[in-house]
Structures are given as C-alpha cells and as structure tokens.
Length: 151
Image (tube, rainbow, N blue to C red; front, side, top):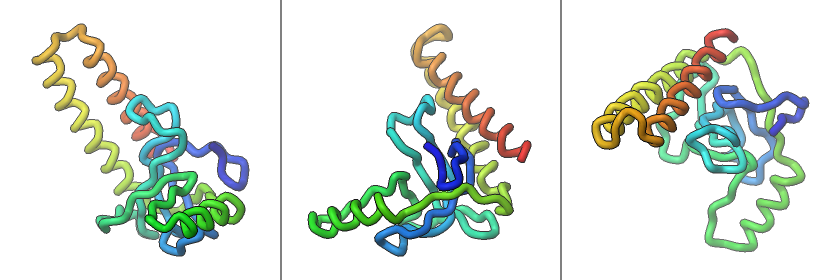
C-alpha cells in the first residue's frame, strides 16, 4: 500500500493518520506488519501507536490497522465510520521521530523468534518446514532492523 504522497509503506515505517472518523484513531504509529510479511496473513498493515519522542505506547488500545478497522456493536456507526474513513482518512510516512524504541521492538521479535527456532529444532528436527519458516521470519525482522538503522 502507498501513503498519500505515493510512497510505499513497509514494515518499520513511522506513519501519521489524519482525518479518521474516531479522533482516537488519528496519531503517530509504526508499522509492525505489512502485507506479504511471513508472519502476517492480513491484507493491510498492522500498526502500533508511538509518541513524538519515539516511545512506544503501552496503552490498552494502542494497536490499529490500515485501512482503519472499526470494531463496534452499532452497525450504523460502523457503516458511517467505514464510509468516512474510506473518503477522509489519510496515512503519511513521517520522518524525524527517534527510532530507538522501534528498533528495540524488532530486536525483541528476533529474540522471540530465536527461542521459537530452538523449540522447533528440539521438537521437529533441524530440517523441519516449521524451522525453515521461523528462520525466514527471523531474517525478515533482521532486515527490518537493518532498514531502520540505515535511516
């Protein structure tokens, strides 16, 4: 997917959402998953809220998606919100936000994946398809870290 300026949005980018139906959906996020990532089956982007100084939010509702998903029991409000977001909500890649917290987030993902690889090797053997899949996921996260450190 591309942002409002025509730039391709990839895992690790810092993005700003504006014009959303629910004002709480507006703000800064970093992309945790993108379509095509080995560990993501979604058709859009997974987002995590981040502050202006690069601190990752620990709030209960700090996860979002692009295109914005509305989760409410009121089908009229959901319909209005989806129509509004389709027309008015915009996403833009932004620069100038410190990336230390985001890099650390992906380093934690690498560590977690390494532990999973060890478990899979122990349970299934070194040549198992699940081990190869986890190795590809680890390589993906390492490439995201490399991309972020080169910025």
